[in-house]
Amino acid sequence: MKNIVVLVSGGGTNLQALIDSQARGEIKGGRITCVISSKDGVFALERAKKADIPTVVIPRKEYTDSKSYSEAILAELDRQKADLIVLAGFMTILDECVTKAYDYRIINVHPALIPSFCGEGFYGLKVHEKALEYGVKVSGATIHFVNEKADAGAIILQGVVNVENDDTPEILQRRIMENVEWKLLPKAVSLFCEDRIEIKDGKAYVK
Ligand code: GAR
Image 1 (cartoon, rainbow, N blue to C red):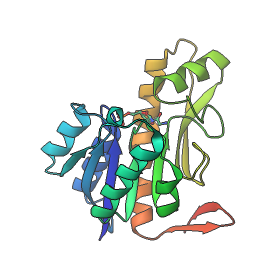
Image 2: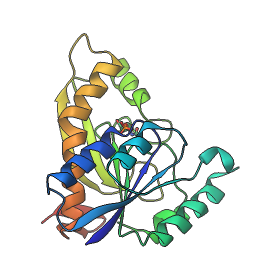
Image 3: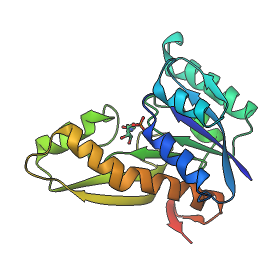
Image 4: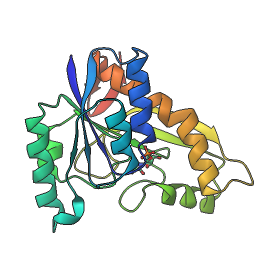
């Protein structure tokens, strides 16, 4: 059984999708052993507690820079003996001390079709605001490995939704979460735990 550690910063609907999927027996070969939050008091922590998953809070605001914060995260991941790290609405970019130590073992969910609307500054609702501002007709979400560049690691799964004329960022966000994120994130986690993701020339392929 692989140890899955989930990193969160907010409401935790993606964490909930993982918890529900695990309860249905759909995550094969792994189990969520810890939830780490970059903020105290967020609802994701309540979701973890309700599911009897141990939680750790490492507040981003208590660290002056990304490097010292990432070192604290790295120490906790090592302590947890993490086999897979899932960034589920984790709003802090991790320094390469973490991404190198856990190469191809960190999965992120990004709420757009990478390489569109991604990189530094593109997170949460901002992504959907930018997509609507541009006028794209489809959007979606990407599940990908995390490397030293923001949103640039190998893509594992992507899913698409239509953008409607009267969409607001909130409506589009919800459509993408319901139809793509909450389905594909647990699926990618299970594929990883079943050793069904192969890396060739820096790209990910599902076996
Ligand atoms: C999700 O839409 C996730 O894709 C996005 O933030 C939301 C978190 O929601 N993540 C990013 O923008 C990361 N770059 P949640 O806390 O309810 O899972």
